[in-house]
Amino acid sequence: MANPARLPHTGAGLAATLRGTHRRMEWLRPSQGWMRGAACVDADPELFFPVSNAGPALKGREAAKRICGRCAVSRECLKYSLVTGQSAGIWGGLAEEERAELRHSTLRTDC
Image (cartoon, rainbow, N blue to C red; front, side):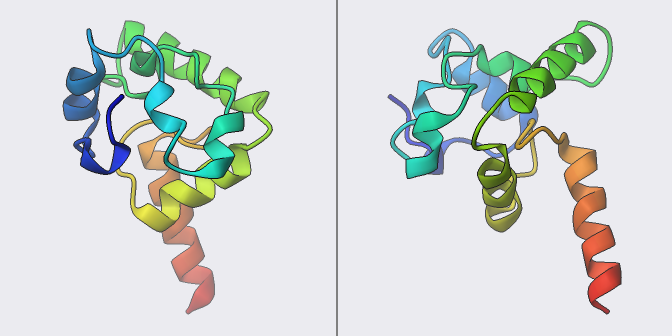
């Protein structure tokens, strides 16, 4: 089982690391207690860490968001991604650019 702290934090790098070695997102289990209850644990990581934002990857991205939509720990997941600066993938139902916008809008309202 891979250690999440040692995985590359880029979409392509993370997907390449996981592709062929982990067909499920089991690497999430030991990291944080809330991750044990994540709906994505048995999902294909390529859905959550697509290598592009076009073509078939868009369908995978939407599938990942649907999984997040039924997840009991999606708030914790989103918070984790924001606190730890996850720059790639779908976390808590939001893609990279959506999390960036959320961070940006939060900074504007905090000023």
